[in-house]
Length: 87
Image 1 (cartoon, helix red, strand yellow):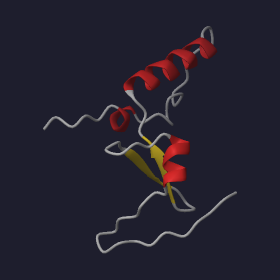
Image 2 (image 1 turned 180 degrees about the horizontal axis):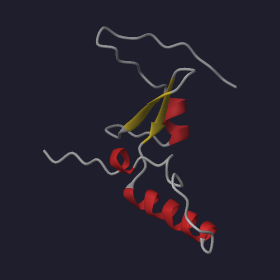
Image 3 (image 1 turned 60 degrees about the horizontal axis):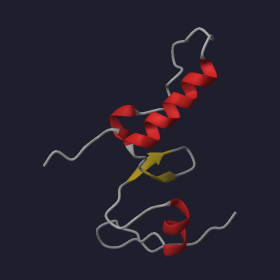
Image 4 (image 1 turned 135 degrees about the horizontal axis):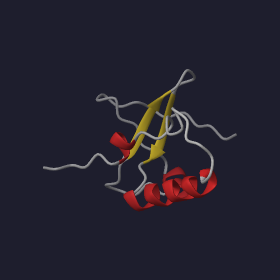
């Protein structure tokens, strides 16, 4: 696993190195999702609505015929994923 140290600026900002931005598809002006975990913060590229729909369709194909259980979608935060800037 590769790790690097980053300096935190006066406003709490960090710069994600270009090699990581390119590897994970984080573009200038794009958005990321920060997820707190027991071990620290996880930073992920925000998925597009099209990517989410594709993942949900794939999930549906995998579980077709299997009775749904409470909590099946617990790891998908649709509110965060579909949050739009309406300004």
